[in-house]
Structures are given as structure tokens and as C-alpha cells.
Image 1 (cartoon, helix red, strand yellow):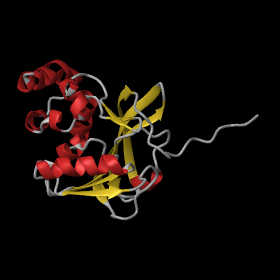
Image 2 (cartoon, helix red, strand yellow):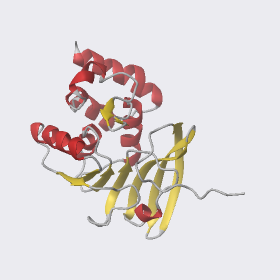
Image 3 (spheres, helix red, strand yellow):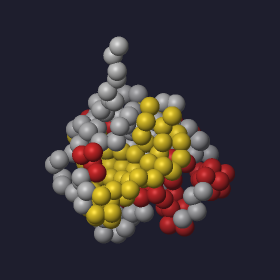
Length: 217
């Protein structure tokens, strides 16, 4: 398979038409090899517009979601980034290529272990992996400039808004299927945030994410 041609086609036929035009993002998608982070069984599908299965009911985001999320959070070289849901480690690697530090939290030990092997193979030394449940909060590592939840949440956890530094950005897919909204939250100052809906999509809900209260008649 010609991976370079497939990568080019992915960018030109999927990514650009979805309004991802930031040259830094497009350059990263060319440089960070998506196929290296896909499970061996699915490497030939690394550039297809689909979520690639990872086990435990988890999946890599489709390429267009990864690209839109990366463009939205605008990672800077001095940023501390928190990612909830390591998965294959591909999106982690995209974040790490731009950030000073990425802390990534994974619930499943085997996914964390496989991702760590990929990070080592690619010489990514500014990633710290954590094993744990970050669906509602992650108190261990303090505050961050960028936070990304790679699974959806029915309700956006308020705790994460408090973890954003002033000027910080949070990306999450919020809601209950089939009506979920990719959302960018920007921290204007301590305790003051602005929320913008970017596009509609559907994503697997984070395990143990808080559910909205339901009326009982």
C-alpha cells in the first residue's frame, strides 16, 4: 500500500473539505504517521473516514475529528496539555508535536502499554502517561493550557473548566446521541469561560462519565 498517497488523499479529500486549513495542522498530519499508531490488523484502513477499533469498545477518532479538534485548540510550544483517553496514542502524538508537555490518561492498562511503546519508538519524550479514570476530573497534575476529552460526555464536567489556565482551551464532544456537539471552551479568566459549538458528530461516551439527571414520574 502506498501510505504517502493515502495520506495525501486523506488530507485533500477528507480534511480540507471539513474546513481544516491551518497549515500547521496540515503539516502535522503529513509528518506524524497515522498508520504507525493504528493496530496492525487495521493499518490498511488508517486513512479511511471511520473510527478504527482498539478493543474495549474504544476506537480512534476519524481523521476529520482529529484534525478539527487539533485546529480548534491551537496548541502552543509552551502549553501543558491534558488528554483524557489515550487510545492508540496517535492524537497524543499530534498534541506532543506542538506542546511542551502532554499528560495523557488511559483507563485500560493494555491500551496504555501499547501507546507507550509507540511513543518510545517515535522518540516522544514529552508525554507522561497515567493509568486511571479521568471521566469526571483529574486532580493529580494540576492546571493546564489545553484539555481534550477524546470520548464524549453527556454533560461537560465543571471540574475541568476549573483546571484551565487563563487563556486555556478545552475540546469535548458533549451531549447524548444522536445529537452531540463538538465544543470548544475558552477560559477568559479564572472562573469565566466561553463555549462555542463547532460541529455536530457522534462519539463513544467516556466510561463513567456523569449522566444528566432524569425525571421519574
